[in-house]
Amino acid sequence: MSIEFVQSFNQYTALATMCLLVAGLYLLYDYKTGKSLKQYIDTFGLKIAFLLTLFGSAMTLFYSEVIGYVPCGLCWLERMMLYPQVIILAIAWKYNDFLAVRHTVGLSVIGFIISLYHHYIQMGGSEFVACPTSGVSCSKRLVFEYGFVTFPLMATILFGFLIILYLYIYKLKNKAFVITD
Image 1 (cartoon, one colour):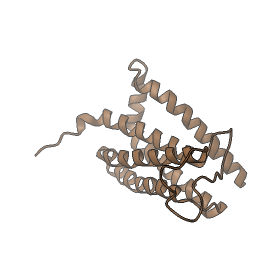
Image 2 (cartoon, helix red, strand yellow; image 1 turned 90 degrees about the horizontal axis):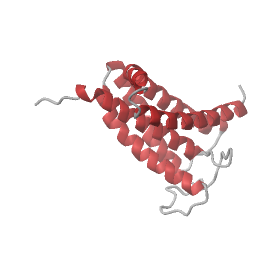
Image 3 (tube, helix red, strand yellow; image 1 turned 120 degrees about the vertical axis):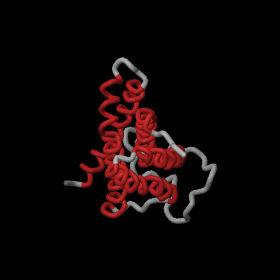
Image 4 (cartoon, one colour; image 1 turned 30 degrees about the vertical axis):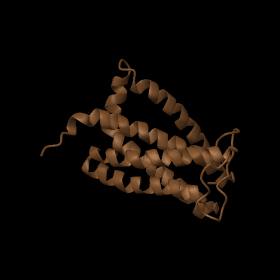
């Protein structure tokens, strides 16, 4: 398997996830057709979230350790929001603990904001906050496909998808979230 294939696969996956995100937004709020989606997420929601975070984490490690792309400071902050979710969701999946989404949604929101800001910088925006490290510049684009797909955009899409998935899981399981004293 060539590096070019992995890069293309990753970029197509990001674009497909963007399309699914838009379609998912429609289906989540369409109560006539959302019934099958509800059942699917009710059954596989934690597994999907776990596999997405695992895949995202594996891809970040592949690009830095195999291909040799050195991550910038904002990339590290985004990774800090993604990596713990793999562990939290693995435990949640094992014990069928849907309360874990209350913790992971916070990490995803922070990761979404950081990656959106990072994408803004890479698309030529001015920095409001300086890059956290003095090594690799946060504005340097290592990937730039279709005129807008960058690593931070892929992270933004992943975090956005996870936020919607977590909120939907929480909505479905909200009846189970009864706290007793």
